[in-house]
View 1 (cartoon, one colour):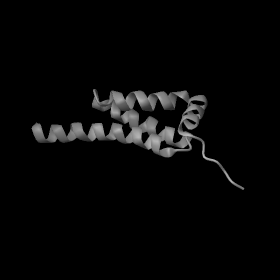
View 2: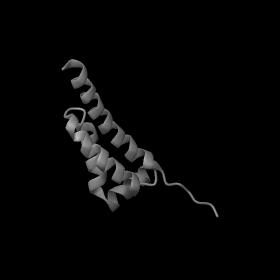
View 3: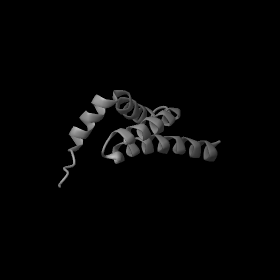
Length: 82
C-alpha cells in the first residue's frame, strides 16, 4: 500500500475547507504581529491549531514561530533600550 502526500496547495485548500478561522487567523495575525507585536500571541495560538488541521504541520509552526519571534524581538528591544 502506498499513500500519497497531498501537495501544499491541496493541503491548504483542505485546511481552508475544514477550518477557515485557523488558516486565516494564523496568516493574518502572523503578518500583523510584525506591526503590532502583541498580536503574536494570536499567531502562536492559531498557528498551533492550524498545525493540527493540516497534514504538513510545519506551515502552522512557521506562522506560530513568526508570531513568537515578533513578541521576543519586542521584549528584547524593551529590555535593552528601556
